[in-house]
Each structure stands twice: as C-alpha cells, then as structure tokens.
Image 1: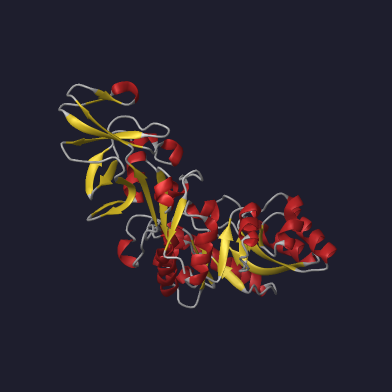
Image 2: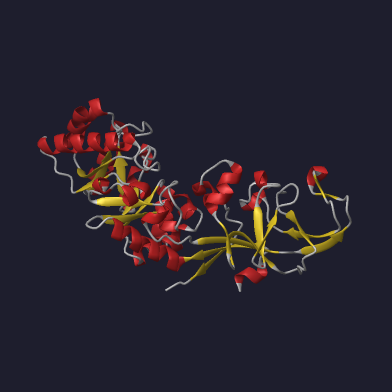
Length: 374
C-alpha cells in the first residue's frame, strides 16, 4: 500500500467527487456542470479529479493555464477544456492544437488566435469574458461594442460563449451579486440584439450554483464544492457535499519526557507534567502551515490532541499526556477519525485563510492515494 512507504500522504475519495458533481447538477437543473481542476485540482490531483468529475456527470472542465490543459490532454482526456485566463499570444497555436476553449478579453490575444486559426484552416470557438464588477480581467462595459466589432472582423473566430465571474457570491444574499447578475443579463441582451447569439452563457461559481438559481444560465462552473468544501459560511444545508481529501501521517517516534522540558524550535511549549510526546513527520513543506503551531489539532485513535510547539518544515510534535500511542500509529491532520473530524474550514480559521488554500497548498511531494476508483 502507498501509505506504508511514505511518512505522510493525502487520501482522495474519488467517490466523493463523483457524488458532489451529482449534487451540483441537481442544484442547477438544465445547466451543464463544468468541473474546475485548476491548481492541481485544488490540491486533489487534476487528472484523477477530472476523470471523477466527468464520471459524475460533468460535461466540461476548467483550468487557469494552458499547461494545466496540456496535462489533461496528455492523460487522454477529451472533454471540452476551458482556459479561464488569456495566455501570452504566442500560445495561441498550442491552444488550437489541444482543442481548447479560450477566454478572450484583449485585442492582442484575439488577433493571435485569429492568425493561428487561419494558418490551420480552422475556426476557434471563444468565450468572451465580461468585467461585471470584479475588475480582475474582462472587457469593461463601455468597451463591449468596440470589442465585439473587432472580434466579428477577425477571421477564424467564433463567439461561442459569453461569461463573467462573481465577486461576492460566497456571502449569501450579498447585494453586489445581484448587481452583477443584472449587468450580465443586460449585456447579454445587448449582444444578442447586435446579432450575436452565443451558445453558452455562464456566470455561476460554486457559491452561486448552490444559492443563486437565476445565475445558472447554460453552464455552472464548480470548483471548491466539487471537492466537498463549502464556498463560504451559510452554505451547509444547501447540498449533501462530502469532503474528498484527508491528510495523514505515521507517528515516527514516541518519547516519555519529564515535566519542565520544552518542545521544538524556541522551546515555547513547556511540559507541565510528565508526558508522552509523539513526533509526526509532516510540516510546512507538506502544506501543514507553521501558524498551526500551538493552535491546530490532530486526531490519533479518534481523539484530538493539540500541536505542541512550533511546526517545523518536515515534522511537529504532539503532547499526548498519559495516553498510549505507538510509533506507526496514524495521525489525521485533515479529515475524519472515528467521531472526530478536522475540517479544512477549521484549519483555515486557525491560520487566517480560506479552505481553498488549505488543500491547494498540499504539495506534490505528498503522494495522493486515490480511493474508490471506478
């Protein structure tokens, strides 16, 4: 077994990912589900996650970069793959070779796509990105007529889709979400009146898929929720999502230490009793944040124990008191053990971030053990 040969590993439940895609499809009847696998599948592994999403009913996939799409194509995945961010113009030819769906929002990249399409004797379907208020990338409202005119003049370009991204959907009921929805709908209406009828319109991310049904349109783009994690507070009752990742390690040393001894760098944790201290071979190089020092909990034998002293690059220590723990015991850093559960949201709260970052930061040196493959 993989976990026997490694001190720390991540277990990824592909059955949970398939289940979550089904839940998201139920939340958005009539819309296609796009499974988002950027950032190495939010840390879960992009190829296995993509395959599980497609098995679960997703119709298409989304990535941030061409290199991520190349990885999927090299693995034999043939589903439509959307690239959310324009790459440098010189990547236009590769996008055609890989049969990718480009997002377009600048004249320079659109021109490069047109040139590559003409050279290949092909037509490339593009999705025009509109800036409806997040102001990251996209065509500003006042520039839409000019950009549409430019796109229509370029040979080899077909406007297949129009889309935008929501800035506050992770806060249920936030008024800015509806402001963006209204602006998007208004712009789509104008685009259609100008004689362009995009096949796909899409706006909803995971949060909006679960809570803003009027945002669903033709495609819902689901990332965090597909991995069983909530896009924000207040979403729990809206679907039966199952977390797909657990992070585990094998206890590699157990020591009995007397009262007064200090632990780890800085010796800031001092034992106030004779205690057993276990060393867990995982650290911030494995995505277990240093700010969990003295804050985080791990599960051993279904019981919670606090991280004792500083988290090091590759190891940290836990005071287990008078409990019997043997070397080789499994410590759960993220996930469930018996009736206890350390969630990504819990860890994120300790270090002042969001659950997205907790899983995405688990690096490639941590092997993934895939469960419930088909």
